[in-house]
Image (cartoon, rainbow, N blue to C red; front, side, top):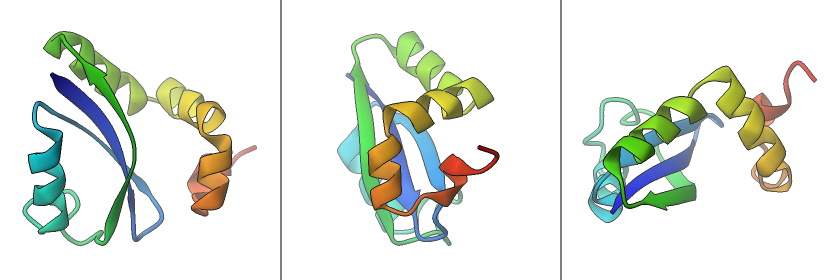
Length: 93
């Protein structure tokens, strides 16, 4: 299985990632072993998707990191973003 996941960071921004082992990858993030999130802890897993095909998962990660992907996330998770005070999702609107 392959996972695309979203972390909410202490800087109130999102981190979107991809992994074949979600549990291990989250542990790496939480323990400061990822350069991308080392100084953005604590982190909270707020969403993940599971895929059986690696290429599909990687393509989804790339899409979610794009402008269109961020727009989709804003609409799909509007209430959850409001609950966690993710202000970046609502800028320019």
